[in-house]
Image (tube, rainbow, N blue to C red):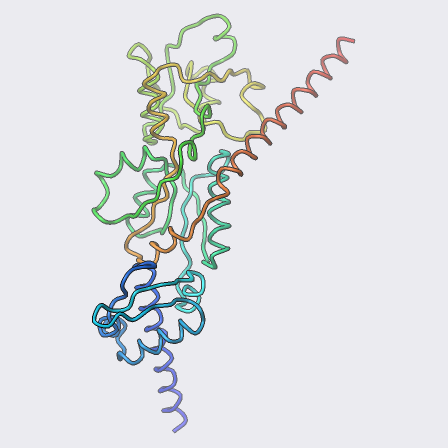
Length: 334
């Protein structure tokens, strides 16, 4: 008798959990203002009775996870949704975030704001890193991860290669992925001062952004050499190439100290490409319906202020380093 009762209780709990999950996922995919799927359809989806689905709706309302208003034959309209409370009630798996390696002020600000917003919304998440916007998009489209951030140019360029309906996206403002003047051409300072022309330049064809920028910046008279874009400063400093486009990142040894000069993009074509790339685009896997609610829960209001703070911190570090250098030289010459 005890065994049978225990089994029945366990089955009941499993049924309610399945119903909660079905209701929550449907609500997150629908969004506030939308019409929830009928109880009968949700019951079939969850493998439970319609009464269990109704009880799940009531429990979620009691916990403040969601509110819905019945409109008779028109169905229930979702009027309120607490993403975190729904997530916990349905015991959904964490959101799997895939981002580029750290170092750039822009992406560090996006990553920290994104993580803080997910935490504030009560959505558990994991974060992994991988270079290359296109490979990250492919992994999200395949359902290996839930959310990534790429440049607007990378996303637009990859649209034709991605499965239809595999992704949902949200684009942020201009300069949120590549801020103005953070895409530069690196050259050896001695070559710039002597007027030596650029004969070879680095290009990373595995990066859609770097390839597009390099092709736009360097004309046909420049030989393009395959170079991993994070290592452009090293290749230029070593003399392997005369120049290369670089996204300014934090470094204990800034280009100036390594004998390099940072120059703005010279050609209008390259500047136009940079403008098109500059917006950060959040991309989520559409195969997980609750990701619609995740994108909506991200306010990301702190991205701009954090980027500004990061740039200010960089300037302060560089000014302190330059002041120490001047003091040391003055002491030596004194």
